[in-house]
Length: 170
Length: 423
Image 1 (cartoon, chains in turn purple, green):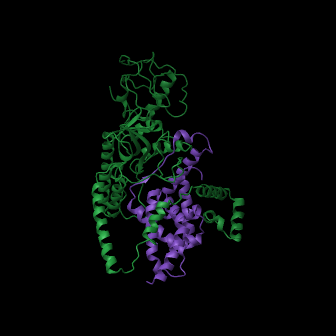
Image 2 (image 1 turned 90 degrees about the vertical axis):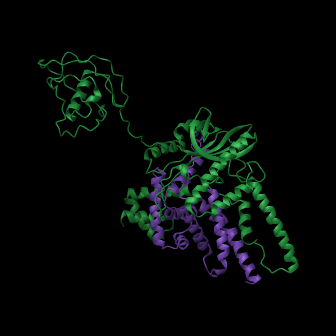
Image 3 (image 1 turned 30 degrees about the vertical axis):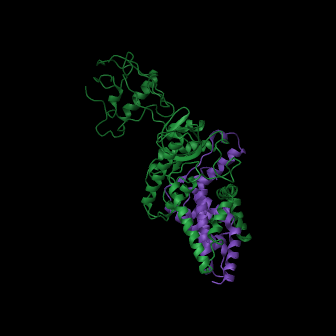
């Protein structure tokens, strides 16, 4: 590979990394439920992406491609380490301090994360990409390699499962 | 459109084209069920969108770039430079091997301790076989505990992290795999319900005391949908987390969040407790109990507790008044031991006895709510035969549920008559 070509790829990777390090890390964090694991997997994702960059088509959808790598890496992690999962609970004395307090907000966020982690990975993925990261069903379909109709179905089921696991009428 | 189709549309309501959205809205005008679904989904959108983001740390970003764009150049070297480089590399290898060797004995707080942990993490990541991985994780867990003991015995100060089985909970401390850990009020309160569980402790060791700043208990979830292996049934102690794991860092209320997700032990007055659940299939009751605790912690409505089972009363029955009920079998002695009747009385007889006890105001019978009163000691009474039948006042059925505990064996299986044993 010529040095010019390498410089182009490095510049492209820099742009991708700067633009997607935060969303990819947060996506994996919501999927895996643990920051350490999310950082490990995100690091692997970008290293794999860097190595695969020379083979990528010039007109490829880089975002979808990165998310596809991240999703597959997350699924591998979930399969491999399915024995362990943290279930955080906030300080009880603080959370009863009153609604709107930071402690109550922390407890609710933890409850939401817990409810997310109860969902099967493929439904969790769709819900996170749509509701947390704000992507459209078309974009999600490209990321996950499925049709828009399949995305809609997963979202509907994910919402119903989330409602059951969250425990309130939400 | 049917309601299920509408709900599927509602799941992606924000991106519906105007025409479809109008159709859905018209349906919502006349369907309160679907309208409620829409409101639920909107609430879900709000709470999910409010999830706090984590920011990539500079160290993490640097690690990624070091492995990608900043990797060493592949340009060919001249022989002179190659020789010099080879010597430098050899020196580094020798130094590294020496460092790695020395790091094996490093303790928390020591300069080489991060090297030791990094080597352990690398070995764990390279171990693909699941059984060996679990074995190594258990070895690491035991190594962490030995380090804690060494730090305490050496009267050193350090931040430690270890996990083990909660053996006992006391007024101000826990015993975790033989290690005494000072814990806060919430841990003391929950301690008895967590005995036997594997807990992960982050603590500060000072002057021989171990003070917990972060306590977690493990959860073992069910399988992922694509997993081909069986549902994991291992107890929490069989699959400990790696010693390098850190807790989720959603809004840790400390000023050091950007440098370390763990709160500083001195900054947190009360240890944070993270609760774990065993597999729901294996311990459904435990899940129910712990879920109540979680709901209470996050101020969600407490689910209805499982119904209380009234314990079976023991002891002798109270003395009868002057007459027996007319339905009492002739020649049958009045029982003196209530449990002896279990399984021998029909449902009809059980109901009659309950009504009679209520009529007679026998307050020593078990009341609704399940707390039995102590039975009085009464002499055995032999019922004479030939007593005249006297009118019995109208019997009011007991209100609410029957105060009687359930009969072992049930009164409905009255295949053998279910009556009293013969004299």
